[in-house]
Image 1 (cartoon, one colour):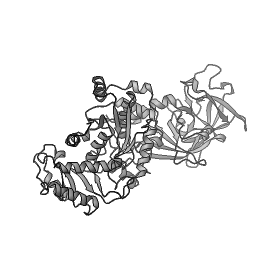
Image 2 (cartoon, rainbow, N blue to C red):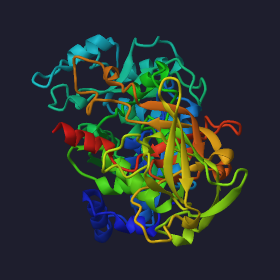
Image 3 (cartoon, rainbow, N blue to C red):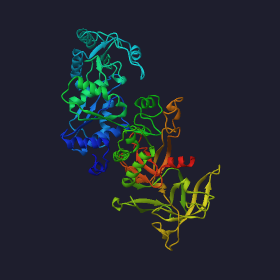
Length: 564
């Protein structure tokens, strides 16, 4: 659940200001919000913003937020999506309690509301084809034309709607439309469709219905039936607010929720269109909806992002009225800030180079004391095995090193963190001239990494004991797209900008042995390398797989600076 600190730290944005004023004026004694996803795909980071807003303002006001599935399109919806959405909302730290609803709960009532509109002359059955309907609708500068079926009698429309309900017409042959104004400057009000024929089985109602209400007709009435006070949605529904209000006003409903629009979340180097995310999955560009490169909530969870980091990110970017773009680095920094405080420090070597400490006793093992978090002593200490043979990173050795290279080189001394000072004496190469092993000596009096005579040693590197390593695969994830705005180029597909280096799998990494007890909920900082977690899907006891959650620093920011 969200903490009091998180709730109190959120700014009083324009939506919260409206809610505060409505409560202060007595317009509402309490508030009721809702998060209304369509169960036709997995949720993504943009939905997280809406979840944090709708559930967040409810938490802040000791009020209620409903989870409602707007399941009006059986062709694209499934129970799998329903369950994934419930799992994602819970994981983010929110609870709808007993307030779980479905638009399909209201199908009978919605049908009755449609009949009422027909009876008062505000809806009619139209037999124009889809193409004809679009042509009749007009443009932004030209009014639409009335359908030739617009002036049917109430009795005719009632009879035809019964036939639609009974399945007497085929899909696409007719629809029920609202009778509003074909000359309205708002095209949404030019006799929008209220019901269409879909002879498809619904994941909850089965084959009871062959006509299904449209989203705009369903949404406002569902809000009304549930007693929603503030219907918060993204700016793409701004023009639809007129229809939202028209339906409720025309039917003289007992209460009228207020729709308020806010800017959706746009993040660079990604796409959040459900259609495009589905393409990435079905065409095999990613391994699934939970691929750690996807900004779906399930993908972020598998990668190792934390609920607290995502909530902090949503709080940081705030709620505005204008569309804007958020840099991916803002999200990644929120993750770094959270993990920097909470992640236990460990040793992992991703590109191993073997060291033999020639003057260390053969067959001997000792345990050195390592801090789990140098800035937080309360997280305690651990014992790490040390032996004659250890692995370090290839990048921590340079045979012909420049003066300012403070890591290991021939004749140079470095500190093995928490262990000893070592000096490289000899380099072993293979037939191709590649360095495969280093022969070093250690100072037995430097236990803990401190020189007994006070000499200065600038370099400190991490390591793992060779006989004790946990061998693992480590997956390094980068941004899925190379272009900052993959959708922007109208001449190309967004898929043309897929990053070929978005996943690098390192098959034989060496990790400290304590990580054999890691759980998928644990988060670690591999010292000097980044933040990592056990992959809950790909890992097996025989071959653990760790995901890099995020690097220690924003490497993309540095890359962009270098191109300026």
